[in-house]
Image (cartoon, rainbow over all chains, first blue to last red; front, side, top):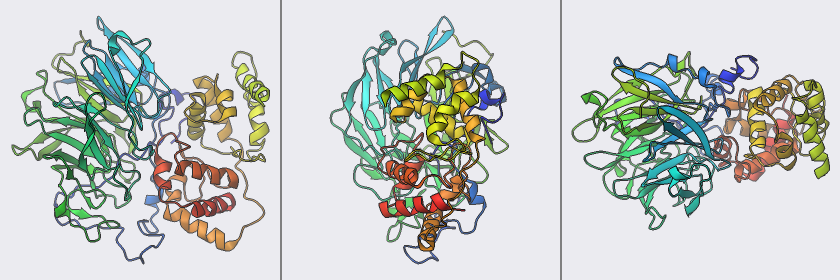
Length: 424
Length: 188
C-alpha cells in the first residue's frame, strides 16, 4: 500500500491509498428486512463502557481505515479506463482528466461540464469545442466545494457551510465572480460537504449531514432543505438523513429519491446504505435511531421503533457509499434503462471485503420501490483495493453518461452503440 | 521571523533548478522538526517514519493553503508536485521518534490506552500507532502537538484533508484529549 514509496509508479497512484473518509457505512444485504437484529455491538457491556461499539479482540477490524484519494490527479495516460467494464454494446472513454479529486457534475447550457471537488478546493470546467475538450480550474481555495448545480446560465456551488452562485458562468470562465446566496449552515467538518441539485419545482436542494458517524444532534443537522434560487425561503423537507451525496427526481412522479450512507462500525454486513424517496414534506428517515428501515440502533434505538420512521425503498449494500444517482431519461441507451436509476457506489472502507466501487443500474417497481440492482460499470475494485472510485453520474444532452472518479481526478463518458468520439 | 521563513522557503525550493541534493534541501526543515526524526521544538511535530502519503497530503495542503500554518504555507508555496513526492519519501525514511525515557504515570497511561481503543484510534493508525498510508504515525509524537491537533480537529479549526478526524473527535472531551496525548506521546 504505498504510494510514494514506489518511485516510478508513483504518478499513477500518487496517493492511491489515501483514505478518504467516511462516506460509506452501512451494512449488507439483509434482504430479509424486518428481523435483522443488530449483531455485533450489542450491549453485553455495562452502560457507558468505553468498549461499547468496539469489535472485541478483532484484528480484522483493526485494519480498516478510510481510503483517501490522492491530492494530485493521475496523468491522463494513467487513468485506468481500460480496466473498467461496461455491459455489451456500451463504450467507456476518458472524457477529461487532470482534475484532482473530481466529484459532482453539472452540465451548462452551452455544453460546459462543471466538476466540483471535496478535498482540494477546486471547481473545474471542461469546455468542449469541436470535439476538443479542455479543462480549466475556474475556482480554487474554496472549502470543500463538492456541490455543483446549473440552471439558466447560473452555476451554483455548495461549499461546506455556504452556497454561492455565478451568473452567466459560461461567458465568464476566466474570472467567475461568486456571490454568496445562503450560509445559514453548520460548519462541522464531519459530513459537512454537500451534494446539491435544483428540482422540478425550481428550488435548490441542500442537505446537511449528521456531524459524526453515529451521533445525536440538534435541529440543524441530518436533513435536506430546499430554498429559492436566491437562497431565500429555506425549509427542511426531510429529517433523519445521515449523509446524502446524491439525489434526483423521478421523471414521472417528480418524487425526490436520494441515497443515504449508513453508519460505520456496527458490523460488516449491516446497516446497508439506503435508497430513499420523499413522498411528503417533513418525513423522518430514521437515522440515528432506526437504520435501513428495520434495525434499531444499538446505541440510540432504545425506546424507538422503526415503524415511526420512513423506511428506504431499497438497500444499496453495506458500507458501499452509494453517492451520486440520476434517473436516466435519454434515448441513447436501450429501453430498459429508461427512467431507471444509475448510481455510483464509491466503495466501502469499513468492511474487510470491500463492497461497491462500481456504478449500478437500479430498476424500480410500479409502486416506486426498488426492484433490482445490477452492475453497470465495474473494475474500479481490484484485489480488494481501489484503482478508481466513482462519485457522481450525469446524463448529457445527447443521452451519454458522465461518471466522475475522485481517485484519479477524471471523468469518464459512457455511450451506447458504435464507438464514436465525444461529439458536439 | 518573516525573514527567516522567507529564507527557509528559498532554501527549500531553490533547488529543483540547481543540483542540490534532497539532504541539502531538507536541512532547513529538519532544523525545526529534528534531524533524526524527533522534534525538540515546541509545538512542532516529529516527522520520523511518517508515512509518505500522509506527508505528501500535508505538504500539498500547506502549498494550497488548505491547512493554515504561517511558516509552512510560505515554505511550501513553490514546491512542485515532484518536490512533494521527494520530500515525503525522504521523510518516511527518517528514524521514528523513540519513546521518552519516562514511562509515564501508569494510571494515566491505562486511561489513555482505553480511550485510544474506545475511539478506535488503533483501527486507522495501527495497533502500535505507527500509521499507514494517509493516516499519520502518532506513536511518540510530541505531546503538545498531539493535544493541540486533537483540539483543533474537535473544534474544526484544523479542517483535515477529509472529515475523518472531526468525525472521531465529536465524541472526545477536552480531558480525554489530554489523556490521549499523554498516552500516545509515551506509548511503547
